[in-house]
Amino acid sequence: MQEVLTSQSLRNEILSLIVESGLEQDCFVEMLDYTIELFETQGLGAEYYGYHNINHELEVTYVTLLAANEAKNSHKFTNEDVKYLYAAALFHDFDPQKSVDKPHEESVLKFISMDKKLRSLLDVAKLDLEIIKVLILRTTYPWMGKFKENAEKQIDQCFKNSDLTRNNQPYQEHILYLGWYLSVVDRVSGYTLGNFSKAMEMAKMNAHALAWRPSVIVRSSVAYFEELLNKETEMCKIILKSLPKQMRINFFNTVLAFMNLRQQEISVQANYAYENLKLVPTIEQMHTRKDPEFIKTLYSIFEELPAPLQFEKENFEESVKNPEVILNTLRLNDCKGEIVGFAKGGLLETYQLRPEVRDENYGYKNTVFLEPLALKMGYWGLQGGSEMRHMFIMQAHAKKYKYLTSFALRDVIRARVEKEKAEFVALFDPERWDYYRVKL
Image (cartoon, rainbow, N blue to C red; front, top):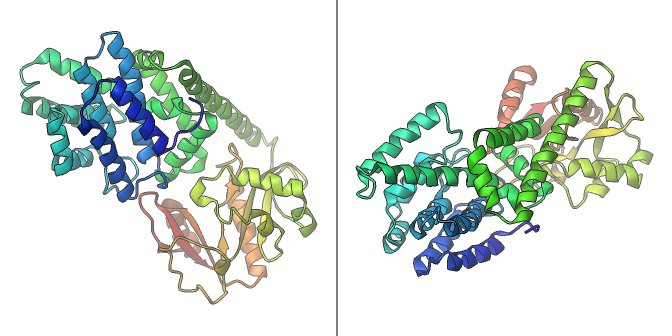
């Protein structure tokens, strides 16, 4: 399966697997549709730009069933096991009141315990809520330190609460094995269902939603895969072996691509440290800005930004050619070198910002909006972004703007409150990517 699946196509694939898994009762289809409805009505549908949206929930459910059917054929799982895995996968990340993207397992458990519709569906399916709670608690990540200790305490309580597991040590161990299976499926599923561009988009969504700096995306992804393959070797093998060949290829191609990118990043950082490489902010002339190759180069860098940070995407070419738009680039070694980043922005009133942004200066034509800085992967964290931003501020001064506004990570803005008298205008959770103002 090479195409990236939408939530609708994932639903159809899961419906086929429900039949194949022998989950004949209507309640299993109702659970699926109820999950989709809940995610969408809570703003966590496919349009939510965070890793833990409805697509992630459905991908985990799809891969859980796909691999579990294979495991069932080899007598590792029973029909009952598959039912529990299905229900736990569907709801494992549902945290509608999330203040950060990463779901809080306790909030998930509270929700599934309190929701009457879900409780009635589980009753019809004859599924023990306490066992489902154990499976969800076992998906806690990272499974170490205080996270693990806290989850294990709750797991012990769930085992005591359930008539099926109380005083039944072998069954408790079996449920924990199922939970381990689900926790690894949770971490590999999205990377088996598409090519590297899908994986990179997932990484950017995760970074954006967790308010990570772009410089850590590749480094953190490599660490994530190494931990998965080194610490979860046994379960990874079992799950990947149970999946179709193309899905295994997708997964390993992604791991290798991230590792190659990390090597390139280290090479750039080494060259920068050895002073073999200089980053030169450059104000571009209008004749360069009209060159189709120049525009194409900028657009390819622009496309590396997370989707919510891609302002004026439809009018990108026109904005680069517009003399009223302020633009500078970051080039390697001199002002004719390879372009590795750019800063762009213009009059605030020409932008369509999030509806929650209410800028008191809107309409006075005294504010320049700086779009999120765009740099090629590998060049973040080398000060090139700040140099472009400082050059942009000089250009805005020359055009007699009184204020500059932009979006940035909350901790970055906090640092600017001291240095530049920056002020928060609008705060956004869970991504903590906020709108701020600086007086020029």
